[in-house]
Image (cartoon, rainbow, N blue to C red; front, side):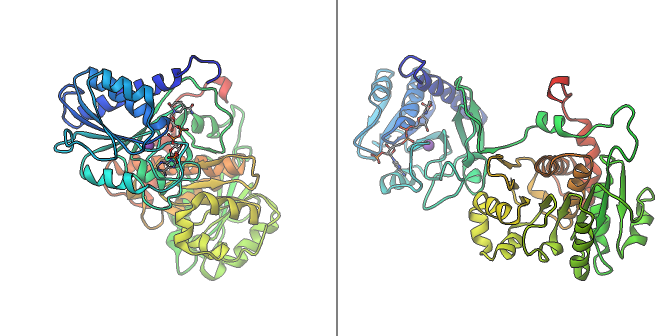
Length: 458
Ligand SMILES: NC(=O)C1=CN([C@@H]2O[C@H](COP(=O)(O)OP(=O)(O)OC[C@H]3O[C@@H](n4cnc5c(N)ncnc54)[C@H](OP(=O)(O)O)[C@@H]3O)[C@@H](O)[C@H]2O)[C@@H](O)CC1
Ligand SMILES: [K+]
């Protein structure tokens, strides 16, 4: 900000916001700005300033724009700009009614990155006036905790959030990510420091996916071993093997009571021997403890899922990825499941530190924390709600194991695995139902469709 003329960043943000609102109105069947009714909810800070300047752009393009000021203070330049463009300004948090009937869009400029969580009474009352109208949030859905993605008290639930410079943790992490709706990023030319939370995109995954060297053979590509499934749950073994046996590693080993089943369905899978990574726990039932003990003794990196998570008492002494869902993590660290779901960032970090392992906390936005506090937490954004289906976690464990065996660092194996798994679910689902087997089958096609990797990023 010090390098730029006063207000330059706000003008860039407001212009990006105004054009995003015009596109949003078009999507909703309006011609664009002209003739649309736009209500701005304006708080005391610069977030309200963005809304006011964007409102001025919309008013100049023929929208009927009313700003509802929720505080005695509002961005003065923004108020003047809106008035000059023909917009109206209502103080005291109450609309004059010029837009409340048939409002096409409510612009939430209540509070942004400078606010505290929760909404004040004036904001709640103003939102109630426009109930049912579509909402576009400026930068963040007001009321959520921007830096953690937690919610504490009431908050806006947006259809679209237009953010500036970079995504914030609240756009990635649930529950606030759900309140953000679709998120659009406007580049305002900021130079940003390294983030504490990040999300892989297709290009990042393309650069991480192991590709066979020209002179590679099955052992140099990595061998993944699985000690999963049981007589009670042979299906878990089949699904974990299907996640591992997609060709990402050079060879897959299976050891366990479901060996006959596994071999019948996967003739290329072999038995016990050396591996570069072991996967334990899915459907292991009573065998979970011994599977973990055997794998640990091998000294190679591990993926620890489901039943074997219950066998953990502390750090394992080998690199490990724990893959709990919220209920399993809650049991592991003796917390309530609802608390874990409300604070995934906090609890994933806590467990990673306590067990000295990468913790992949499964959910709509799977959250992956490293034991090294300096490593950014990764949040996965691929997937579909159809992925909430039995056995999909077994496939994920196998897939991550194969990436680990191929030589990826645990944080990369876990986050690239989660990305591929979600993308495979979306591909296999194509908007309809999907099974865990279908997810595993779609993994090679997702890898084929990754963007080409430039030699520099490899
Ligand atoms: N930084 C940048 O590079 C750029 C930033 N930009 C924009 O600026 C925004 C940040 O602006 P900001 O810093 O003025 O803070 P902001 O979020 O508007 O509100 C803070 C004020 O709100 C109040 N308040 C607090 N809690 C509250 C609550 N729960 N409910 C209601 N009110 C509450 C509190 O005042 P109080 O009423 O308590 O005196 C406080 O002073 C950012 O999100 C983006 O939109 C862009 O223009 C591009 C460049
Ligand atoms: K906002």
